[in-house]
Amino acid sequence: MDFEKINLITKNFFERSKVLKIEFIESGLINKTFLIEHLINGKKSKFILQCISNIFESYERININHELITDHIKNKTKKNHLKSDNHRWETPCLIKCNSNNLFALPFCSDIWRAMEYIDHTISFDILDDNRMAYQTGLGLAKFHRICSDIDLKKLENTIKDFHNTNYYLEQFNMIIKDYNFIKLDVNVKKRVQYLIFSLSNHILYVESLLGYLKRKLIQPSLIHGDPKLSNFLFDIQYKYVVSLIDLDTVSSGYLLTDLADCIRSICNKAGEDPDNIENVYFDINCFKYFLSGYFSITNKNGDYRFDLLPEFIYLLIVELTIRFLNDFLQSNRYFKIKYQTHNLYRAEVQYRLLSSFVTQLPTLSKSLHEIGISSNPTFVSDVQKIV
Image 1 (cartoon, rainbow, N blue to C red):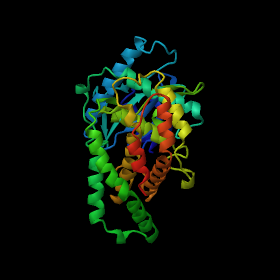
Image 2: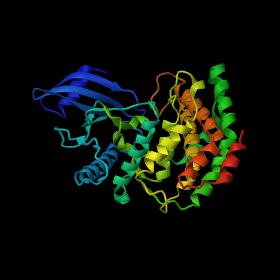
Image 3: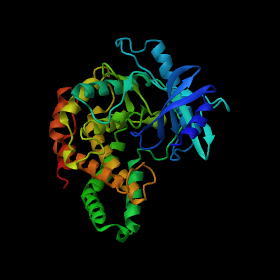
């Protein structure tokens, strides 16, 4: 990244600033994110600088949501909302631009924004141990609990059809119908066609599963939308969750979507970009520790449909597999890539995780039953018949 360009952008947020160090944060797949160390008023400080992706409906909407959530969390933490927990909980507030008094800076056809850096924290792409799985579950539960009384009507829609599985399926069917497979390298073509064939029965089942879930009348709540492991900040010394960041995907949805996506992320201990795809599997012990953490402060016996968690995990893994494959077939428009077949490989990783998840569904269901949640045995048997 051009050092002088970053320095110039920074001066629009901080008048007396001199950039000392720029660190590109690779974990995000959408926005371009940088950790900036600068000298301001004679003191070293850090902040986060982001170039906002054009996949969002509007940068104004995501910033409206961001401010709504961070203001709410700040107010709750001041009132010691989580009274039973002495651990800190922080949220990265946006920083206004000096030149326009807004949370966004138009610069060279891009939109930039700055936000606070949370000190003494660290993020991970892969869990170190099961204790961290517990802390991740606890952290997600804290986020859900502290945001549970936000008025959903105040939330802006930032990404059209986000987590709309029907949309991704329709997009997939349209793409492969007209796709010119001849243009692909022979080996790449084999990989794509094998993945399409492998997904075919899962897609048929998902179409019926979506109808089934729609009839369950699940209560909408505020959700993060993308609670993958790298979006959790851990205290650098004690390894408890301090914050859930990347709030651009916050929306009205199902808590089960958040739980399922987080479980999908942390239970793949090889990571989403493993050096060896053979190392990918669904870690059932990680799942158990996550549940223990999440339900340690959440009422699992309420009126919420946590019994549908296995269905949602299955749905989210299939959904992400299709999204990665769709993006590869559409010339990588959505997710950032490091090489041409990166999204294809990501899709293959998710499909391998899906296969491992399906084989362990009986054990997973038993784990839920042990904490008082009954799952649907018909779903378990139906999915295991898919080959």
